Amino acid sequence: MKPGRLSLLLAFTTLLLAPALQAQDAPGKKKLAITKIIATDAVGKRMSKQGVGLSLDSVIEALDSQVYDRVLNTKRFEILERSDADALAKESSAAGETFAFNKADYILTIRVDSFNDRMEERKLAALGKTMRSRTIELSAVAKITEVSTQRAIASTNFKVKKHDSESRSESTNARVGEGSDDLLIQAVSEMAQKIATRAADVVSPARVIGKRDKMVTINRNDQSGIKVGQVWEVFVLGDEMVDPDTGDKSREEVLVGKVKVTRVTPQNSQAEAIEDTGIDVKAIVRLKDDVAAEE
Image 1 (cartoon, rainbow, N blue to C red):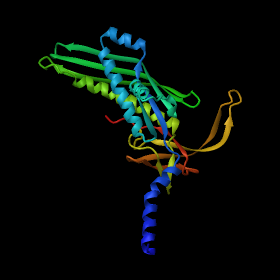
Image 2 (image 1 turned 90 degrees about the vertical axis):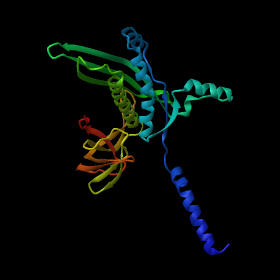
Image 3 (image 1 turned 90 degrees about the horizontal axis):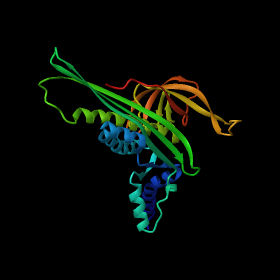
Image 4 (image 1 turned 135 degrees about the vertical axis):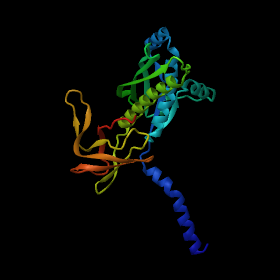
């Protein structure tokens, strides 16, 4: 083969192998299994007695898919489908294999422990109108377990409350589903986002991945809950510390600055340093001041 063609072939081969070599160098995403979301027995019985069992079923089904979507789109995990664990177990058994939980690094378990769906109606006879108000309250506990040690590394209770009202004249035709479904979707979406953000922060804390003058890049995208206008604190890790009472190990965290988010993209986010005494790549960032939700 001629030297020119050989050089061209080697260059082409290097170009093809570059992504694979980079992937080998990267630490890789952690594998997360999400178990099927259920409500506690007490909540199910109470909702059934109140006649809103269908609303609870709708919330559970929607939350199951919404959590999966939000966690996947944080781009921090490789998700192992667990909502259909029973079916997967049967398929594995038929193939002579075992559906092992230990294929995951972490397991995310969610239990809905409280749900309220209240409707209030007040008639204003003098105005010929009826005021209707609906409130959705949703509470769930999300637990993250490290598979290798079977140790729960985080357990958090999340609460969401949504409220809407409308004024309708006596001649208004009844509407079915529109307002109610929308309010349920809002509550479920907010809950799913909170759970996904917490899972990402516990397993893979937000970090500075780039710095140019006063501008820093954070490894959180537009699906992670980060918003323009938020203020985040920046920490660098110091010495390892051991709690003398429990033996638990942790790392010292030294505050080295604050940044304000200026841009959020599908890949990451940019922020401007408003205080900087040592911000650098790999530093951990944590939310300090949130911004008001859009109406």
